[in-house]
Image 1 (cartoon, rainbow, N blue to C red):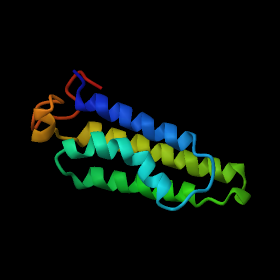
Image 2 (tube, helix red, strand yellow):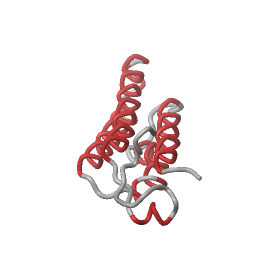
Image 3 (spheres, rainbow, N blue to C red):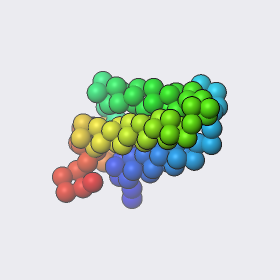
Image 4 (spheres, helix red, strand yellow):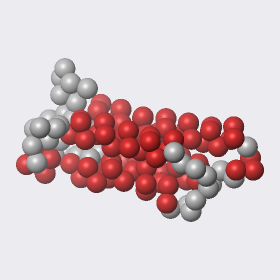
Length: 125
């Protein structure tokens, strides 16, 4: 059975995949929530609340808005810089959850870990 860390890895990769395949300018709300969709659905509700993790999630939203609002006329380099910033923010979010995340009771009931235990079990990811 999968652990919460497995769900996190898949959610982070899904976010990175969406950031990499972002084709151009879209509405302000579409990209930010698309890159966090899997994280919010499969990970966030299984963690004890932690402001540091929420801060990293907010950084992802900000980076995604920046990418979504980067005008194509600024050139490929500007778009790629914004894309790299979003991918970095997703990486930081993943690392924050692995470093700081605590499995909640809901996740434990779903078999994703031990309630009160770290997301990254010793010897794990």
